[in-house]
Length: 289
Ligand code: BDR
Ligand code: CA
Image 1 (spheres, rainbow, N blue to C red):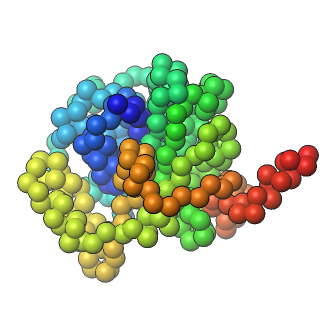
Image 2 (cartoon, rainbow, N blue to C red):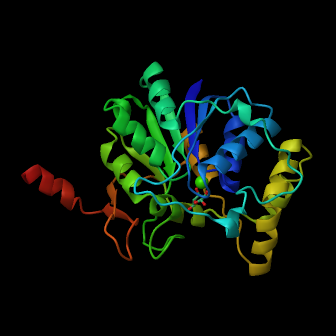
Image 3 (cartoon, rainbow, N blue to C red):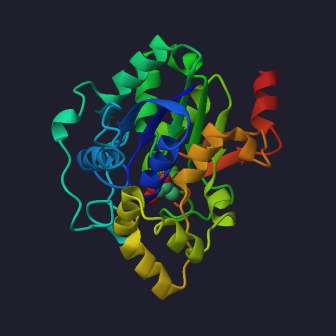
């Protein structure tokens, strides 16, 4: 069975991604939590709520970074709600005692070292925990089997500040570390990919009405955003599930491009934007050096 670790900032679409992963024949070694959509305390609580409803509290959950590499934090109440799971009133609090005491970045290092070359990381939030793990242990990035992440936008029209996508824009330095330090290609599901594959609300309505308690949970956490989007005539865009699906069933990916990509770190309008070196200028320059 494929061994995966999910790093997330759950989040409604993170919840969808986790539930999809739980439905597949994979071995989820851990779920690691980071600040992103909301503070990591709420994220950890949300992950435990998701695992409780799916009856999978056997999966260890680790709390990680409270802040980005430079110390910033965000809240996304408009989309995800104040609790970051749609502010549904009747979801019971999870047993927080289940949360592991080890820091998420340490857990990442430990689990990858115990399973060298075997672990696929699915990253669904800002990349802070993963960047920290790669700083803790120089071999970390060589021992990960693959990393699939949702983040970055190709054309500079994202959903965060002027030209970034949220996961990269919320912690550009962490994204920079991950894109530049991994010894293996990093598989990126960009914001544009998610926009190109928006789903019909009819599909969503069928999907939350299949009559299971997981579907009921999904309906509760997403009903506010469903209402909001219906009013605004907006589509059903769920980004994180694409990264989870691509990691678990790579054959669903019909088109992929290998390019050198990095992240703009300078203060200003383009901070956090993914930069793609389509003409391989940086690589050529490196070769000349
Ligand atoms: C990303 O931002 C978050 O709000 C979502 O969970 C997703 O990971 C999309 O830009
Ligand atoms: Ca997310």
